[in-house]
Image (tube, rainbow, N blue to C red; front, side, top):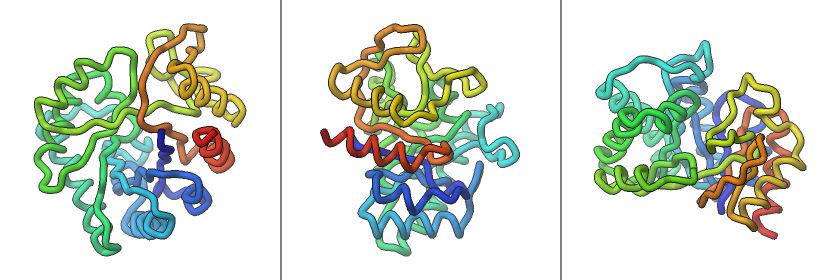
Length: 238
């Protein structure tokens, strides 16, 4: 499993994160970041040999892209393509391309909970001239996710989260709930090792949720992000 983190969102963690991660989810200017942040993130990715992924979100900087927006399928397709293309132009300056797409915040959760949003994002991904994978959340029952992606010819990357608590249904706890976001790196490493060795994650209610993941996410805006990335990086290589 590879380690991914969100970058280019205006935090001070980016450069310290890059020495530990394999995949960088770069904000595309809608929910956070801008031309300067994208250029810096891509430059660091090239320097550290890290894959570049687009991290498009709802155009809602006031709420950091964490509030759902009522957009049509066409509008979602357009915003995904526009944001990925903006980042890809920056990438080409540095001699690389956007390798994958991972939606941000509320757009990510809408993708996982609303089929029409997921399908719109698949449509956008399939329409791009350069082939890219779509990163979605690993969950116990992913057959319908896989089947719809196959319909559009889009490769999927499945991710699990090191720094987020899961519900008994295998979804992420709401950030507003107590204990939803881990600040203890030990808890993050424990969750990652459990998934790596046992093939499941234990929910906040004690349920064991079986899942298969290609990548582990540590959120770049988590205060413990850098130390967490370091420890998870080590754990994934044990």
